[in-house]
Image (cartoon, rainbow over all chains, first blue to last red; front, side):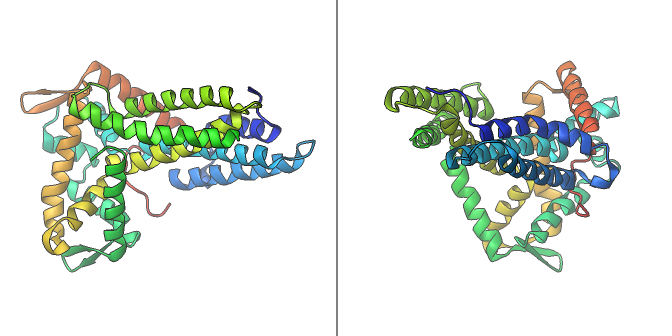
Length: 168
Length: 168
C-alpha cells in the first residue's frame, strides 16, 4: 500500500488545511462582504490556488493525482461549509447563544424576543420564507402561500433523501 | 483500481449509515445521528482500506480516500440539509396540506412556534438548557458551548442572528 499522496493531492491537502485560515484572514477585510459572500470568495480563491499549483508543480501531472486532489479539496470545502453554516445560520445554536446573552432566565416568549433581538417569530418566518420565495419554491398570493412545481419537486426530493438516509 | 475500492467503501457506507439510523431509532440507542454517521464512515473506510490492501497490488491510499471522502461528505451534506432545516420544514408543511395552500399567519403563528419549541426541547434533552418553572436557563455546559460559538463567530466575522442576509 502506498500512503504517500501525489504532488497535486499533497497540494490539495495543504490548501484544505489553509482554507479555514484564509476565511479567518478574509474576516478581517471589510471589503469581502457578509459571511456567505466571504465563504464563496474563499472557495474561489482555494480552487484558483489549486489550479495554479497543478500548473506550477514540477514534474508531469497524472489524471488520477489531479482528480484525487480535486476530490480532496471538494471534501474539505463541503466539511467547512457544513460547520460554517451551522455557525452562521444555525437556528438551535443561536437560540442557545441568545439565552446565554440574556444573562437571566427567560420565558418562551421572552426567549423568542431575545433570539430575534427585539423582533418576533413573525420576522423570523418572513426571513426563512424569503429564502423559499427567492429560490422559486414558494409563491405568495395575497396572504396565502403555495408551493411552485419546483417547490413540490424539491419537497419530494427531500422526502426521498430522508427515507434513503434512514431519517424516515 | 484504488478509486474503485473507494467507491466500494462508499456503497458500504450508503448501506450502513441508514441501517444504523433505523436500528438506533428502533432500539432507542442513545447515540445521536451525527455520531452514527461518524461510526458508519470509520467502519466503511476501514473495510475499504482492508479490501484495497488484499485485492490491489499497488493500492494508492489517497486515491481511494479522496473519492470516499468526497462521496461521504456529499451524503453528510444532503443529510444535514434535510435533517433539521426550518425552510424545508415550512415547504414540506405546505406540500403536505390539502390543496397545498396555507395562510401566512397560520405558518407564522402555528408551524414556526412549533419548530421553535421543538428546538428548545432538543437543547433541554442535550443538557444545554434546563426549565425552571415557566422559565428557561442555560446550564454550565450550555454556557460553555455558547462561549465557544461566540468566540468562533467573532473570529470568522459571523453575526449572531442566524438570519439570512439577502444583500449578501
